[in-house]
Image (tube, rainbow, N blue to C red; front, side):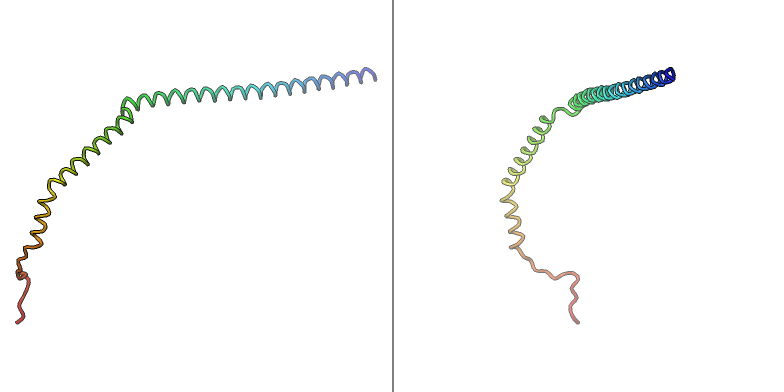
Length: 118
């Protein structure tokens, strides 16, 4: 009986060691998965930053600097406003004279569609 109980004890101990090894392996696997995930995230971030930098460079080469574009647009707008204002001041008096002459000079005429009553 003692040999049987010794054998059972050995089996229980072997089972416990196997269980411990299995738990250790699961922990190592979990750590490795976590580490792999962190490495993948870091690699993705690095790749994303690299692609964004390339995109910014291409955008700058194709479109030019946004500051230059806004400055050019502002300058063009100011020039257009200046031109319109000077044109207004040049032509205002002549237009007022034409408008007033059209209003004051009334020439009464009978409309062509008017039919006298018979």
